[in-house]
Image (cartoon, rainbow, N blue to C red; front, side):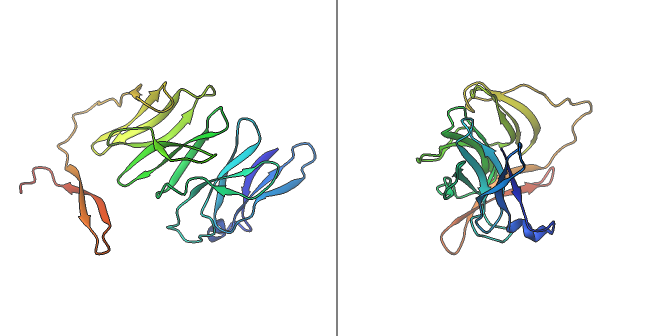
Amino acid sequence: EIAYSVQPTPKVHDGFHSKIRAIKVADETTRDLATWDGANTDPRWSPDGKTVAFLSTRGQVDWIANRYLTVVPAAGGEPKIVSKAFDEEVNDFRWLPDSRTILFSGDAKTQAHLFSLSVEGGAVQQISAGEFIYSSFDVAREGRAVAAVRAALATPPTVVLSTDTGKNFREVSKVPQPFEVAEMSSMSVILWPRTDGFTIEGILVKPARYEE
């Protein structure tokens, strides 16, 4: 079977009314796996074929809704959100070979990191480190090698590799510098309180040669 996401029409807003279905290759019969309202996308089978994971806004139909990592039994049943404890956007994910653990990339204020969680419950764990933005990652079939693209505030993206399931990344590519880099603005992360008690995090960009 192939799992896929489908929406009523090609209209952009109908992406918030998509569902997860499966189709048998042999006879082209289809069945529903998840029919929650909201955006339900990016289904992926677990390696053992028993579970389908996907991203869902769980009934939210607006552009700022968080996408949650959700699983549903491949044989049918009620979908279950497994990333409720992660109060940020889940961007992408991959199963590990044990069919119980998922690695995912997600926002972390002004950064983006790789995280892991068990679909059977438990805390979300951040596995990448440093003040970086991780994206476009993938996991080798054996589950230990993880490649990703990593960038920072003042450095261009490079390809990094971990042979420890997402820990201790090292650079495996270098962006060539065929010309002299111009003097750049300085950037720093700043914090300020909101009236409701929460703290906002942002990036302050100062022009080159800026003086206080």
